Image (cartoon, rainbow, N blue to C red; front, side, top):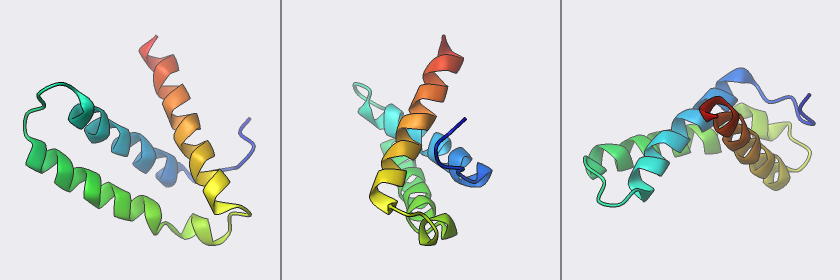
Length: 78
């Protein structure tokens, strides 16, 4: 069980954010303008999500969210 109970929509947004981020990090990505726009849109949604108003330590919670979603993605890929 997760130490912090993140809302499903926040977890899904973080997972969706990872896809364009990873695509832009790849060598010679295609469609960079669309990827950057998508990344910006998702970044705004992540940053201003209402959950952060209730998190005890926002910086730590953001880090935990990123790590948790990355770990889940690695498990699904395996």
